[in-house]
Image (cartoon, one colour):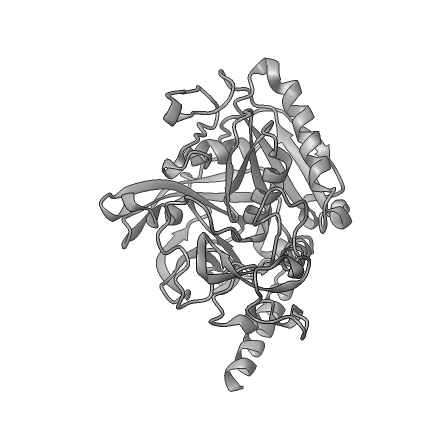
Length: 425
């Protein structure tokens, strides 16, 4: 009981601190971007600063500057040096962490380019990087102090291209600002890209809870052509010269389509204010992927392209986990059963009270049998997070489980709604 009370008091104090921070006192209406190299093996990791850039727009909230949700495998905090006050924090995940769970990571050292962004501080700041340990607790890994007057902070713009508004509902600071980046659209195909952006926007707002929250979103797209159409398909010896260098067969999974060209993604996104980055691939091959607060990827013309779009945004925006368990995913022990996953729609029942326990009707058995009679009900169904035993999902079916299903389950809808509310205050 004492532990619960302490957690409530801590959460309340964090929330109050977030409300008290005056954006204009500590920040300018621009973005400070820190690119760094994240390298290691299955059991080791290290950080090295690459470069720091100042970008012209800030697309995030000016109110909720402290991330109280604390999702993601990584987390960073920003402290104002003169006052030693915490003024910003943010949770995220990375492609490097996924790679650490593959077979390759057991015998290879590999490096990935990664980025964190924050509103541009007026004073020098100390940035502390955290990583989740085996018990799912954040541990301090790396500290870096930014001299805001340093002439090494680059104001130069790279990959400057025009943009167009797919949906405009207001100022960036109180909207979810989604930027869509084209991959593998030639100059002659940019009109197709515009049509695709409108098509996927319509698909997004055809399902709940996005449908009821359409007014809380802005969607912009950057008109950046590639020399070739499509994306790389290494398993078929197809290589395309494209602006973001996306590739199928990421981690040797045919339909996992991602990019390690982090700098190009961020340079292109910087043409507009953004909260979330979505890369649209000009391909009819089934595929996509997403990483929480990193970027999302979807193809534009596969038969289930609109469902892929929704599913991947569930990962990238709301931190939802995959609820299926019959995948050929090469991850090993992605969800250790001795700890509770941070994703809001998965549980190992280690700390189920922190998940959706209160949303289950008394008449629903826990665990819940995987029978169609319980379809449409919130329960605890075994199988999720790529494994058939030990990890549980909240619904018999959901778009995070099966792309043939058209809706998000009740738990996923709540998680998306919570994120929308947090990002738009």
